[in-house]
Length: 479
Image (tube, rainbow, N blue to C red; front, side, top):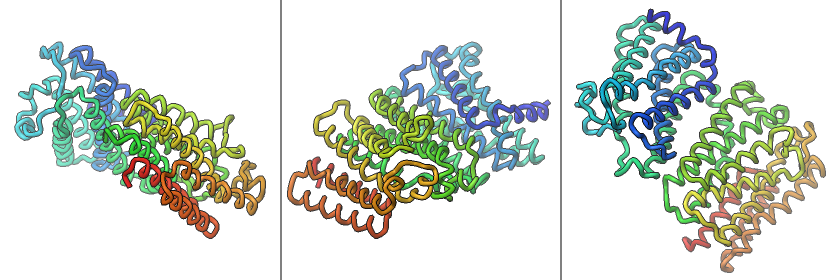
């Protein structure tokens, strides 16, 4: 009977698709959280609700990783089996309400009571519940039987049971202290904490199961441009005054994931160009399929959007056009990427990233804030024109319009040098002293010399970030 259940559960075809599995676990966690609202009047405040949902991704991702380590079974089969077993998380609230008379919600267990609760199977722990404990033990037992079925080793089966029991006990404990579960910052910290733990489990799993894919994905993070987006968001928060670290971390995480979403879209629709100009990228090397890559992009899109929803309405409103710009830039029939001066999209993205950081700390704009934001837009737009220099051959082959393909490499470089000068000198309009003016002129000269001799785009981006950072620190009188 157990053998038939395992074989059937691990061969549910829809659950071989990791995007469907992601949405499935999201749906299960949504239903489970809503059950707690129905039976125990669980709060529907969106940050608390999302906190509860992200919690369930941790045991799910760790379950897949642990079962893979212990069995080395087919990844898709493990994913399908765990997805079926997780249906059992829906049993706890109705069991506790109807059979054990529970009328109040579940809470994290005090960490100091962990040894006692583990020894007594959490039966006497009022923050848990007999229905909840029963459901967890049933899932753990199924995982243990799965390992025994795959390895024929009783020792491994028992070891997995104890491992999962310890993991469940730890994850149900109050690992981060808060005076109130209604504290917005606390719930945001927990969402980010669970996201980090889930990511750690997935990275560990990928490291063991597919190192080539993991290395290819990490290498393609576009560290210089990713850093530019993340740091621009950070500068917006610094300018606003850094009132909330959790809100800042949420903004930085959101923009990082959003940028990876944009990168993947760009790779998918630039694959023919990359075969000429960027041969090490995942699609160009064949280390990942286009279908898989697109699914990863969708997951990045969903998680980054949820993070902004959990943080603030204003951040969410700023975030919508960031995603829209990513689609307009790369995806047909829009594909602004093909048109001359498409870099305006990058400038607008930097403008919105700065405001995202700003609104993670404040809710009102000043004229000065808008002026700095427009300087970031102008500078990012003009400075980013130089990035097309490395794609010259691929862009020419695919008839992409850039100043290099239209006016030729030599004249294009001269024009981009002129734009670079304007980009680097634009902060002078907000200079507060002669020292500031001298600094902006000097860093402009350094960038020009470097670009003329080395054509090192990542280093030019770094120089521009130094320039904008100096401007903001001077305005805030930090230096």
